[in-house]
Image 1: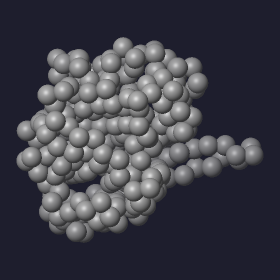
Image 2: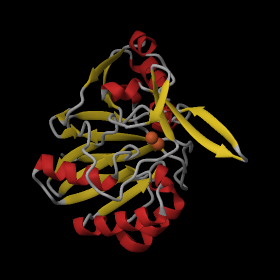
Image 3: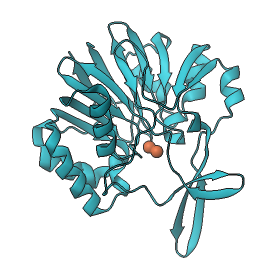
Image 4: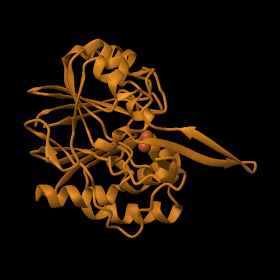
Length: 280
Ligand SMILES: [Fe+2]
Ligand SMILES: [Fe+2]
């Protein structure tokens, strides 16, 4: 694929302007059309698309990495503009989910899932294509579907729960998936939050594509909520892949991003709103 990948929603902005919000969305321009991966939290998607001269009406398909509201919150706004369009996701994208933390001895429970009902999104034109497995979504792009958890050091975020039948349980994030682009320079991996673990995802994509040249990794890594040991083990594992561009951000957090920047130097960039990666 030849094209350009632009970070449209992210927690922070650079001198290029746009709005920051805690969330993620990525705009993909290819020779065969434009696509949207995730939709941010809801407030910055449309303003930022317009700010960076990306025509929302050019979007041909929407891909969702998982059901968290900081990735799905802009879905209603974009569907209101686009009308009928395919939205590709894992069936568990509609799970009821919470973020539960403790503060001063008190439990704080926040709803963290998709904030719109499926029927409402469908009434706006969203045509959900729900798939659990690795699948081709355009001529050059693939979605991973469920990613097997194999590494010993990638632990889930203990604050994140799902609910079913009135029972709360640690969120298994079966719906966590990433976008894969097979480019002549190697694989380009766009992560949502990488709840499956960035190294698990990399290993799975290498297995599925039969290619081990990784050109770039963008998106959220969730390392902000991992132990310092997990961050170090992830960095050690990542070094084996000889990735040329690491443009992660969002739930990577500034501490882990600083560690990645120190380790990968000129290969690292912070994937803020407006940052781009050319794929040739
Ligand atoms: Fe996120
Ligand atoms: Fe998430």
